[in-house]
Length: 255
Image 1 (cartoon, rainbow, N blue to C red):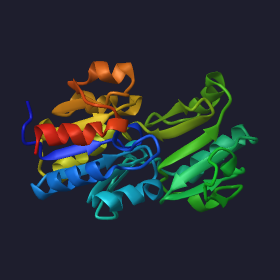
Image 2 (cartoon, rainbow, N blue to C red):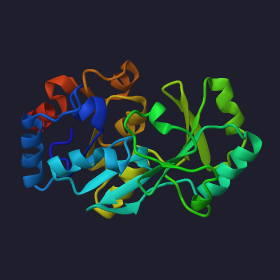
Image 3 (cartoon, rainbow, N blue to C red):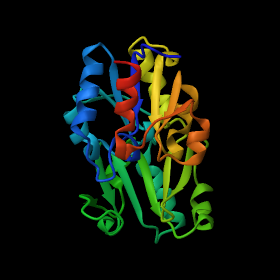
């Protein structure tokens, strides 16, 4: 059993955040106490940097994992990650084969799209572009294609090089990402940077994209509201996100 975890990694939505997307004062206080004892607290999220920066500031976090591992930041600067290289060229290939595709690209914390992206993401700020020429030769965090079914997604999968994969999300978008863009790969990168064994890291999560880190870190803990598959893979199950499960476990076991 870990009793002096040097690093804690937590998912945000559905795990550290309550359902209304806030963090309780209790959770903030517990994390600060953990940090004061020398612990390193890391947020690991599918969100882009711009959508997680508020929480990074509130919790005074030095390191964060974004886009499920496509981007790794330390002290506000990108230090690692696993992106989609030559993104503009790949988008051109897709558009040549499927010219009516609705495509969006996340690159350098900016969203580019050839359609009205706020239809899928209400309130989203984005740059409208048709050819994505400005992204040729550049690395993107991920490429997004609008799809209506799993079978439609297959036509895009056929165009991808081996190092990339496409995953259906919300039954309406296909996310094209680097095979290595996972939260656990990013955790391993940070562990090496901080000279910490992944055996000395605790991971908290609730969803499919948290499974690998929950299985492979020294201790994996699922919040009470997690998917059953995640609970089954975890070493322990704590209280739900609504009941400050992450903070209550830390307070009861590490402080």
